[in-house]
Amino acid sequence: MRNNPINASIDFDKEGIQHGFLSLPYSRDDSAWGSVMIPITQIKNGDGPTALLTGANHGDEYEGPIALLSLAERTDFSNINGRIIIIPAMNYPAFQTGTRVSPIDSVNLNRAFPGKANGTVTQIIADYFSRTLLPMADYVLDIHSGGKTLDFLPFSACHLLADSEQQARCRAARDAFQAPYQVMMLDIDAESMYDTQVENMGKVFVTTELGGGGTTTPRTVEIAKRGVDNFLIHSGIMAGELLACDEDIVELDMADSSCYLFSQHAGLLEPCVSLGDTVQQGDLMAKIHSTERTGIAPVEYYAKRDGLVIARHVPSLAKMGDCLYVIADVVTDVVK
Image (tube, rainbow, N blue to C red):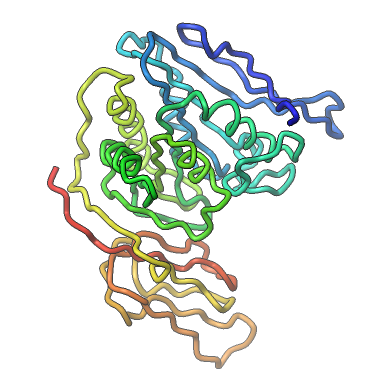
């Protein structure tokens, strides 16, 4: 098996704070012997567990990079026992251009795992995580939001796993994050996701969706920053008490594929419900108007289940196959 060409400028075994790069050789028109330089920070103190923290798995999602850059700027880590590996922009080429997928190879990093050491730039990054970074980690947090095309209620999430003990540990870490919403998440194409790679390796894994629309808000950034600290406290790496969410927490479940409402038409999207609305099966969710001619009645889309609207399509022009809404079951209102 070919060795991965990425070289880390930091020493993963060294104590203290290190700032550096994951350097991936990439020859291109404007730099014959160039490299993709992915910023990385490591904090190591003592022999405790290792947490791997990532943002910008998709390059147009910004709560993660803000929270992790802020964490990497700290200088006092006397309350740390263990190792924290911080990669604010996991898909750095996409982050530089504010795009979901890499501008280099048009590959979605979160659908490229386990990766290929002799593949495209994105596949090489995925392979480095799979074979180098993830084996070092005990706890993994990957911070997402909706990017330019989706908007979410801010939630932390884990998945239903075959290993019930592992699932319980992931769920406990999800809850410790203290997002206003906590979701048992169902992905529509989990096979090649980072999430699946991490979970298949037996790690404690938490993901999030903290807003969207290709921007941030003070609320979603605060949730991300608090969640990062809580994740580290829960893992036993950072000393301290969990920082409580200042909102009532709602637990949600995505039971099956009927949670997703997809468009079968292209046109102008007229939303009929809002993010956070409670809906019942059969409620009118959206209308899609033809943009090619007048005098045509819009196509109507209805809820396939009861529940809470936790995600919505952002652009007003919809395409066939776009996810219009996601509805989740309310399991319980969790008292803080």
